[in-house]
Length: 131
Image (cartoon, rainbow, N blue to C red; front, side, top):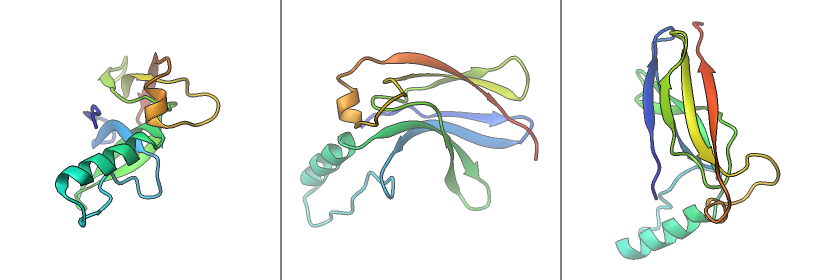
């Protein structure tokens, strides 16, 4: 399982954000807690399960005081997705995310199926405001 996580800090909201792949399942967990299996069997089972589920490229934020990462939103993405690059935008409250993904339109499909289909690079401008 490989994914790229990009971390950046919004100057206007003073929050730390991440762009990373989301496993679209009931829990989102990679670890299936199958402790009755050997480590090698766990890895094989987890990889097979992970590859067979849909994915998204998502925006997350670090929640101070709770030491956790919270889901914010999904960028338009599906299938084989989420090796993002993040750069500063034209204003201090903007970040530009470049990400490759399978076609985000139409029916959903697994990450594994997406790896065999065409991908394109998309540009997303994220604007942050104070609350």
